[in-house]
Length: 548
Image (cartoon, rainbow, N blue to C red; front, side, top):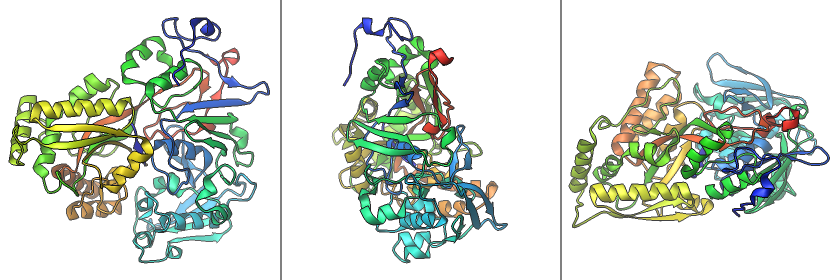
């Protein structure tokens, strides 16, 4: 789904006395943003500036957070993370599992009052797989008839297996049964876009003056590096049950600055918590701290299309074995993260991951084996590995890069130079594969199925920034995608995971948790492993109304 990136105003104490939470040693202003007219505003820290708000082109958590408010697909996520009806009030799946028929809500409308139609979905899904769109998530639609051929430029978008049977009935045909297909429709790349706006404005259809959306909110303004403002969409089919009137998203990349703003009362919800402040937060405002295990893996990607990692599996494995994951999770992160010795998160229900063959070695034996592989790869103290490690600007990425570089130097003698880039530039850099060697990145699953992790490492996946290619891996993943859940599918996924770990184009580090601070007057938060939260499910209840 989503790539993950890991004005500080401190007010005088006297300004905190009214509406202050916690104790004086940890100022924490408790004052919801409610205007004199009763308009409620939810203010959320959002990590980084989104690249785009085009559902077909957006990548990363910051964009996904906003798109869930602006657009609504055929299905959406309930607060606890399971799939429920969205624009589609119901659907029927054929006996062979290859035809899905969706019945749209007749009261579903765009923010300009126009009805949402099945033809809008046909237009949008065709656009999502069209080569001209260059969607980084086009592959998520691969189960649909002719999607892969269209993505590869071998067939026209009009041949996609989607059809509007009438204004409110959409039919999607798959080339084979796909157990997780319905879950993929909750991804933003499956959301509809308003055809007249796209045709008239092109890429500019996402700008506030042109944007027409079908979700609970509409786009009011977008000031780069300041904030993105949304307001309730009066034409949304479930507007009566939407409580919060306005949502503001703030792109704050520095976790300490975000915490300071939260304490000052300028935010109601943070995108994270500084690692160094976790103990303080847990001590002073434990009721506002939320740690939610997520279906996510954080890892180092290795560019296997260029030196020094091209054709050097032993070197890649040596780097993986030299890292002490327990120190990383227990001493550095200290926030419920789990050491990763597999690719698929252990929290995923119904699948038992394959682990590295060396995962059970003692610390001494693991490091000795790492040094042996390093030497066999042609490196030594006299001829050390010299490489660059890229991370997203911010405390989390910097800390991980420094720790890893120190471990590699201590165990192997490798000389790793660390450097950072801002989120947008970083994404462009890792996708191009031209100027990367090692890069620190995270991936949160798009849906609850192992395929959301396996698919991104297939040869032609747009998310395969390592440039990994394995016919064995590709065949196993492709076969598992169209097989019902059971022992046969599990065996294929085990082949894929074992192959990936053996080849080591990636170095799994840990399985993550999301850490948020949420003011006590914000109600409706239910942690879910996909991190899929909708502002329409929240409410702001002041203390005087029983909110504390």
